[in-house]
Image (cartoon, rainbow, N blue to C red; front, side):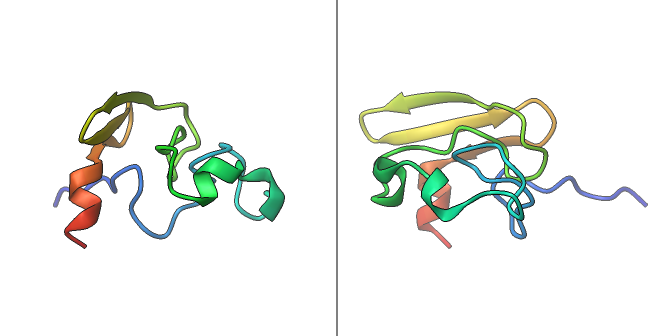
Length: 79
């Protein structure tokens, strides 16, 4: 049986997606104000904390973790 690998932003996240720090160690004020307002895409994988490759487009963004795959901003709207 093959286990599926969770996506970069799948819950529960272990790392902060804007800081890359473990959530237990991350202070609430560590998240940038623009990210709190929803103006910034995630820059780090929530599963492993690695920096993701982020492409910002006029209609949204997509982010890719080398270990956990790709997530697109349009996918988040469907949840």
